Image (cartoon, rainbow, N blue to C red; front, side):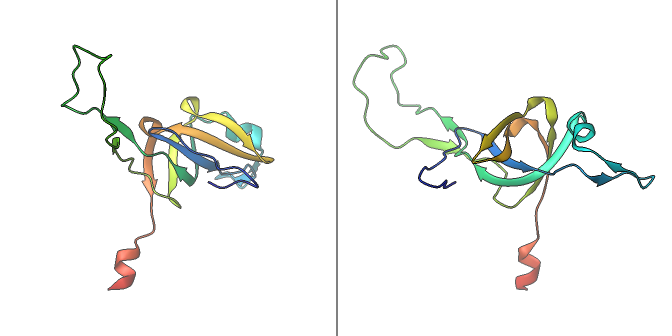
Length: 126
């Protein structure tokens, strides 16, 4: 994610999410303030950046001699399932709130995401 003059890199299997704001309407027709939304166990938001995934170890590494010289082969990752633009439902208590240039975001590990909702672009191409 690009900021004004900085690049923001998400690490590992973490996902940066723009949370849905308060003001949602309840089933009874009442508008819920943001403080009520924050107390919910499950939140939702839009995925704006995704980390590379979980790094995989190289099976050829010599684990008995970790000090020995290593080759500079690229790190391989198990990618996350989330993609940019997905709507994610996730566990609130696993999220970490951050503010980037006066915007509120949540950093969520992939394991805290319960469901991803994605537009089905493949059916549009047919």
